[in-house]
Length: 443
Image (cartoon, rainbow, N blue to C red; front, side):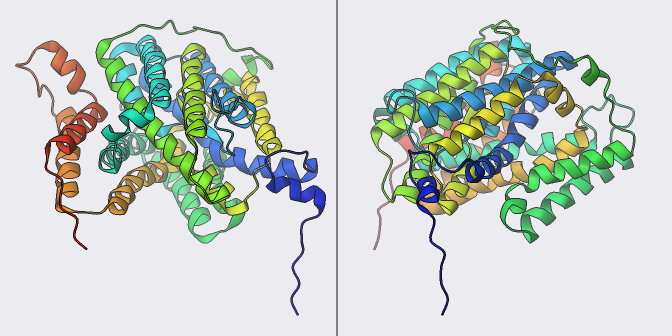
């Protein structure tokens, strides 16, 4: 006769929101969450920094800022005032890859100042969504959010492939056999760990791929530690290191992404509440959670970090393990915060070669696009929805790739619509969904 081991009274606290669990059990569970979300906090600011062409010291500040605001968001969601600046749900928060294509476009056009200004303004728009999401949610049905997510994933493919080749076409080693070998070793490791392994190894496949790729690059002599030696051990973040500047086209494009991301965060809160508590998320949980994330994204602009979002991979961990004790999430947030305050740690992170970043993140970007496809399928692939998604994505991907597409139009048209896939897909999908007649549902 098979027997099952029941958790001890002290261990059972892990499955309750409050109470003090055994530290020996809580720390490994917290580390599992950190491993699952930390990759985005490393790669996102590095890719944006590369597009902006900033110095190594500024890259360190960007990684620090991204880690710091992610840690603050995790702690707010766990210990903040529920319904005000917290969802009160067991969620982890990391850097939001959905923002990447727009951030990249903004820094290429207006530099870090333009990105910071757009991020601060966009985060305010995201908080407005949290405050009145019930009144404007009709603008973002699944067909709209799915089209936006699919477009975001597609628009990131060239970034990953460019990084696999070496990151910069001016680099004499760009496209070399060495870069591609390193990128595919990293990618092969991610695929093996993610598809053939289980448990902690499967959950941290991207991180393991980066570690393996890093050591291979070290053996190839591709890594240099000049900036690590000069970096400080402890350093507090510097507010407004990048002075904000506000450009209308950047504010609009990033603001739309913040609004869509708020809807995505709502989906993550709903998934957590349903998976853990078997009930829908309450209005207070959604409002507080969205406000907390966008407040931290605003602070990310202040401290040079990238915007944050609820980490979907961590939602999966929570739903699978049912470990919801907020002490676990507090420990996870504390670990990320400590990493943010140690510049030497950030300096080591920015030595990661670009082919390693490309090989590790191309699967992440692919999963973003496939998430959009899954959202479309879940909503039902009716002729109407396929027309809206197909036309919106076609315009969004085609227009920014066509040089001087608006050459004969006013300059503001080119600035707003010519460089951002997200603006085009969001406006197209919203307008088509409002204008086109609804289909009659048949039994």
